[in-house]
Length: 93
Image 1 (cartoon, one colour):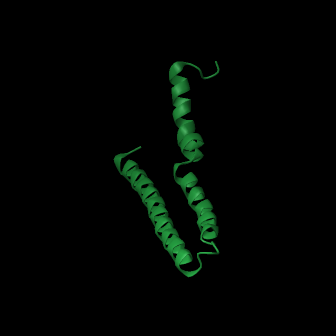
Image 2 (tube, helix red, strand yellow; image 1 turned 45 degrees about the horizontal axis):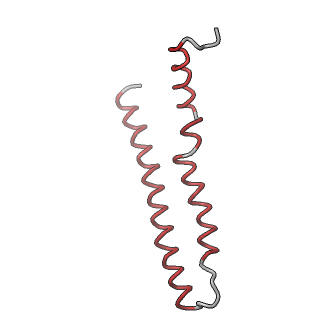
Image 3 (cartoon, helix red, strand yellow; image 1 turned 30 degrees about the horizontal axis):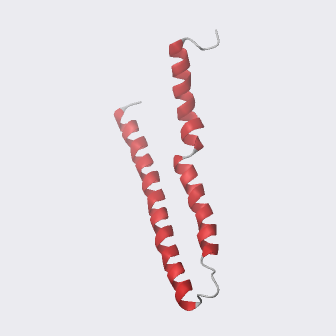
């Protein structure tokens, strides 16, 4: 892989990570605001946890897509594992 391709791959990865952290920050700020709004307007009836939970599922899915199994079991992992096994002489022969 040439230097330009490696740079582009790294740049895309940084964008993925940055996008996740932006999503996470927005999630935290909005849900803190919803908690405060809920406690001010109707402290006897708590509802803030519904958007917290629903959006939380989305944040977890986003985290999984950025940091999750594809990092461990995706094409890059497969290629590394193939090279590792070939180097060790464990290619099945």
